[in-house]
Image 1: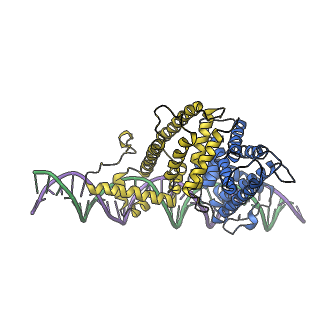
Image 2: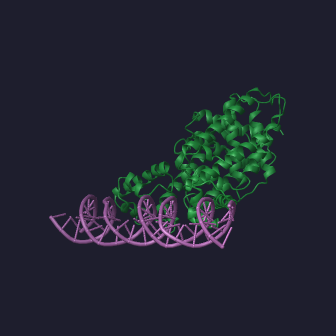
Image 3: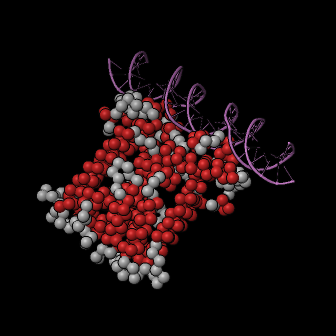
Length: 214
Length: 214
DNA sequence: CTAGGATGCGAGTGATCCCTCACGTTCGTC
DNA sequence: GACGAACGTGAGGGATCACTCGCATCCTAG
């Protein structure tokens, strides 16, 4: 939870003391997920969230100081889950990745990303694109992205299979391509693609790009 | 203009008769672009649009029956511009594309897409992701995308350079990758990439993907 | 059992927004 | 210049939404 570092405008009114309160808090977050996904940010009203959680608005405001605080917490949870999932998917290689085939590195990461976004595309869009977010959280997200990109760029530069002339740019395209394609296709209900097929094809795309003959 | 096929809820109140009225209409659309880009859909109020256009709200509602009608028109204009730009960028080849190098086909299309989204990323996001759009328009957009994808899939299947095992899936990834990467990178102000560099790199990615061995 | 804190309630407040309407202003025509 | 139509005005109605506050109910320690 990120509540320790948050300003007073995003801190809950009271820390829950009884078990009942913890359950209520969780119910609010679950209801918020559903309501934001269905109605979007602007029409995802606090009254609707409270109703979906089987509560009154007043109770909701016992746990969250305002509407945005709910959203911020949902985003934080998603960021944390994504970071740990991707890091866990990276193959363990104490001597660096240069000895591993590229597909063995890219494949698991893509698989983790696909799994992460398998459900809740609408919610994800609302959280990350539609809703206003505090600059503090946005900066954290950008820093995370930048770290990931430079880390990947350095690794790619030394990998024997990689032929990209500008590894940093290649790292950026790679990460953006993975995320974008997962978003677009994994959750497009009109023409679904099986998760494993999609992951394999995105992996094929990335590996082909990084190892293309000069 | 798409006003001929629109229902009464999206038709302007009156067809403009005087030159002044045409200018007013154009001013409203320009102002709406700016206001939606800056404030998003929900906070892009009709009063703000009218003010930005140097008009009163009442005048705005002489030309557009409601807020959404303004948005629909902006989207239609963008769709039309995008379609014509991409079609114009395709190389003329009466005997089909099979004799052309893949890069000569992909390059111009990517270049056209980059140029098309060079400005107004924020507006584009609002128009296509944040704002609610009538199902009719959404269906038109999906149909256009599907046509483009199947057209490209058929062409790719017969092209000698292409090695992708599933041309339709490859066509889909190709189109989505181009659009996504253009959106993400061409208009990310925090770490800008020159338009020509970006277009070249995306082209490299697509060609590498489509011609990957194995 | 009971006191007092924790939790839950929901009508109401003020703010914002879309859109209307009754009325002025400008333009084209004779 | 005078008349009618086209065009422009902006205060305000009606609706929605975030959030509050006074009070009821529940839980738990002593």
